[in-house]
Image 1 (cartoon, rainbow, N blue to C red):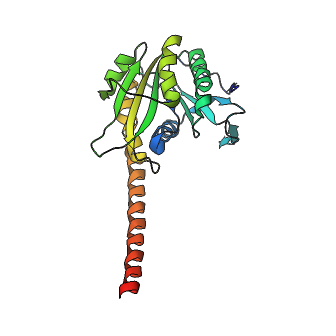
Image 2 (tube, rainbow, N blue to C red):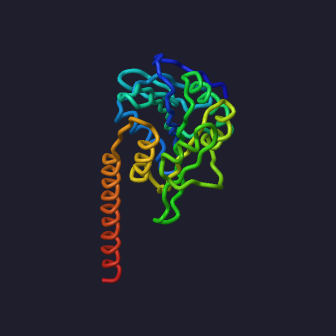
Image 3 (cartoon, rainbow, N blue to C red):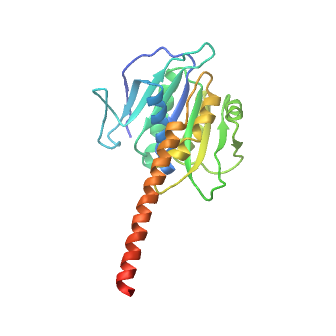
Length: 244
């Protein structure tokens, strides 16, 4: 997998924090990353392309961008930190994950990044499941503590996030992974909203509200209930015709 880095703007960022969001269970990672870019009005600064990636582009403000994109933002407060968000709508094949992660980490290192927050969704087993955090590398323990989430002491992390957890420290970067349970059957903005308080706690000067995501989740819930009620009515009518 030959990966090409395309640079759009040399934004002068100082020790930025990077947030990574690739598709995961319930699309929670992608939803959150896209939400951050939109809410913070972030600027496209780079992209990654490869013949192994799906043949599509994203049109944003009249410009075509490749499947993997980086957005940047300068902090707006005295104590804040600069921010990079890397996101995509496609899940890379297992055999492509390693080289893609290498390309992502190389660009982040070029931008002076030392702290990475990677978002990952897990299948919800029951309603009592909650988000957890794990961290590896320089500064990761401190970042994990800021999240105020339960620390995962053992387990398996797959995909780009899994590779990033063991590769980033070799390049002098720490990775803190936020994992939240989500509905594997459909996009789950409600679960994506559970990332927001943790991310806001981990990045100084960042202020994000989860209300729009929660409102979107409520709309999906109402639509599902309405569709289920319609199905139930049809079943009742069919039963009445057969047995009435």
